[in-house]
Amino acid sequence: MEKQTLFQFLLLAFRASSASDVGSADIGWFWQVTDFHYDANYSLHGNPSTMCHTSGGDKYNNGIYGNYLCDSPWRLVESAVNEMKSQNGTPDFILWTGDSVPHVKDSELNLAKVFENIRKVSDQLRDEFPNTTIYPVLGNHDPFPSNQMSDAMQYYQGVLNSSHWDYLLDEQQQADFIKGGYYSTVTDYGLRVLGLNTNLYYNMDKVTVMIWDPASQFEWMWNQLVDARQHNQMVYIVSHVAPGAFERMIDMTWFYPEHNERYLSILREFSDIIAVQIYGHDHTDSFRVLYSGPGLPVSSLLLSPAVTPWKSTLPGVGANNPSLRLYKYNRKTGLVLDYIQYFVNLTAANTDNQTDWQVEYQATQEYNITDLSANSLHKLLMSFKNDSSGYFQKYLVYNSVGYDMNPVCNESCVRAQVCAIEKLGMKEYKFCMEGKHHKTTDIPPTTHHPKPHKKVPQYMFYVIGTLAFVVVILFVVIMMLCISRRRHIAPYRRFSTSLNA
Image (cartoon, rainbow, N blue to C red; front, side, top):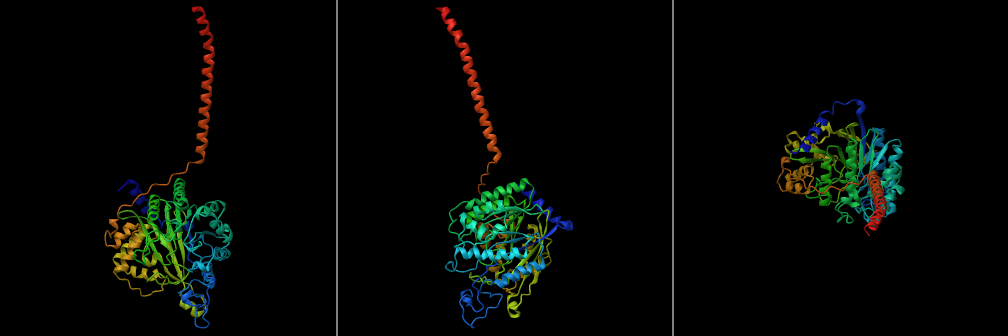
């Protein structure tokens, strides 16, 4: 085992063991809300087979809070944000992890409608939480056409101006954001938040398919993490799409392979300062564990389920009940200590014409873990492999936010779930699904990629310029001395010549 890897492992273990020895002043709370997928064309009498758009008279009755086959009506969006305020109206911050635009064909949208969707959700959050910092990131449905992210500054500038993200991000964050939809900031308690645009690595994005570093985000991310380490800052990685595979489908991965491996390489390199990674996109309640070597968990990835109840078009995936997540964390170390998952039973809400949001579960109590560190999630994952405790069956129910209360999971289903959680590299995942190297202790070596070149600090240009100026001055002085000496010697030579004559 390499010394650095051993040190990181011991450091993470110490942090996890010290989680309970903190004062109340060090404990904070923050919200994550994700995947609203607000559909302005939702209709109470719309046809569910066409996203509840086409009116069918009295033939269809979709309910005022939505339909499992369709995206969120505005009343569901309002209800979710109101519930956040009701449960905790003064969080330290809010993480809004993308996808405000519905799952509709591009022919039904245009860029103006996309900006309008994002703006309505943005304004709703800001109106309900006027004194709370909101950290937003983009989802893969937020560009136009959908999934096609690029480094086009006009789009990102449009999100800032037309969707009112210029109210959420300061000038420096905006300057980074227009380069590719990413930014860095520091919380009031000194944690650095990297709001990333991992949609740039999404394997449905045809714009970035052959680009090694789309929008130069890898290089920027590397430099930010170097700077955070130099300033002794712990980091939150916040984005929409997570690396690795989707747990509810066999061989369904999200990133292009080369982007996936490079991303994981950076995460492992800086795992000692990355407190947690938080994502949306999957619409399911799940988690991932990143390993630096056999049996060495170094980073936890938490995936929150969606507000929209929409049933995925992917075969066998299903729908979910609308959900919200409230995190408890250590303000000094950034360690996520716990979270509370809230949900609303959509069927009951539509029947009663009111949303009765409830606590679905509390992570540490339901899974009998001490916190959400990589070590704790590793132990939970190990219990899934031998489910005598029943934790895996609980996880399956929560995975769909209680939409499926009696999930049946055969051997291939179990393997898909476990391999997605444990094997984030695509080769390791493939081996796992084939039944090879299935144990955590048999993780194949990680493929390392060249590190991005570090940018030369500004002051170095001044140093180099000064040195060059000094060299020029010395050269001029030496030349003048040589000329002076030559003039002094020349008369003597003429005098000597005349004597010899």
